[in-house]
Each structure stands twice: as C-alpha cells, then as structure tokens.
Image (cartoon, rainbow, N blue to C red; front, side, top):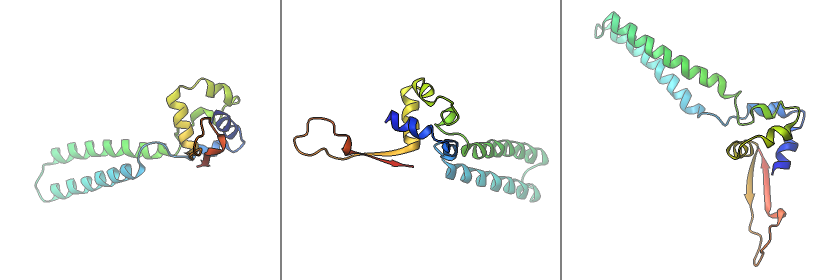
Length: 137
C-alpha cells in the first residue's frame, strides 16, 4: 500500500487531492449555521414583541454571532484541510511518509482509496496480492 500511496502523491496533480474532505461533517455544520441564523431572527422577534430586553438581545446576539463565526470558519477550512496535509506538496513524499505515525498513514490511505479484500480461495495459506482491490477516491 505504501508504494501506491507514495506513487499517487508524487504525481503533478497531487495538490488537487487537498479538496478531498475527510474533516468535519459538512452537513452538520451547515445545519448548525442555519440554526444559529434562525436563533438570531428569533431574538430579534422576541425583542420586537417586548419579551426580552435590549440587554438580553445584545447578549444573545453576541453569543450567537460568535458561535456562527466559529462554524463558518470551520466550513471555510473544511475543503482545504485533509489528512493529506503536507504530503501533497512535499518534494520527497517518501521521507514525509516515513515520518508519519500509523494513525496518520491510515487516514491518508482512507482519504485516497477504498480497499476490498477478496477471499483467496479454499485452502489458500499464503497472501495473494491479486485478491486486493484498490478503488481510488
């Protein structure tokens, strides 16, 4: 697997792989942002109806805007950050790969490919490379 990863990340178009999203759940972040925007609207309505004071409106608005800003920053960074990190821009992919811990290597492999192991057949006691199927993402 390491040879496949290093070969792929050494290609000229490897930087395009940074668009792979293995970060936070974008759907959940979008839902959270929509909920925060709705909350800001509700605060305005509550103030207009006289249910909350101006101080309460200001405090609630400040908290909701800070939370919304944090979510929007996560959304902006989600498409740029991946497990591939500095591997795609490395001059020597092999040396960067060699310096990664096992968890990071697994994350890189998961970001790049899906792996299916097919049954080796009855009575097989040795590894058969042809039973490994790699599907590039």
